[in-house]
Image (cartoon, rainbow, N blue to C red):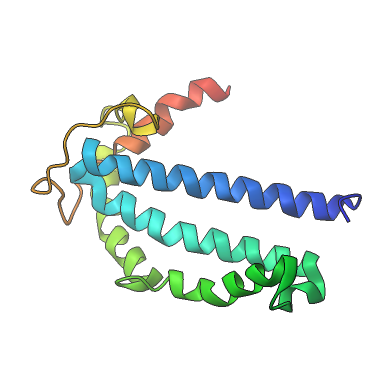
Length: 161
């Protein structure tokens, strides 16, 4: 079925979604060391988006697999198990609504004080193999005091033109 364009598109989209999720997890995890005051927003965003993207991808792949989606053993048995267990991943300590609620109150502050004003995030935030400073668990805050990722996006626009 790889000869069918739609199947190739779904598989390509699934790979891209996995790469996006990997990048989200990398940045959120490294932020704990490099940007601990902003960690609450970044971790909530990653914890909300990763299960959502995964669920959408699994739905698309289910359509491509057809009845093989329901196989309990063999090559697609693990897919069926993952599809069944996926809804539990979005529950976490507060569920997806809780993650959104933790981000929403911070957005007006960021819009007024941080966006287009904060310095860019440190480059090490995006570099998997760069060394990290020691973890200081006294630094993370319930509410962030800035949004360096937004500044990085603004600075990156020149690269895309």
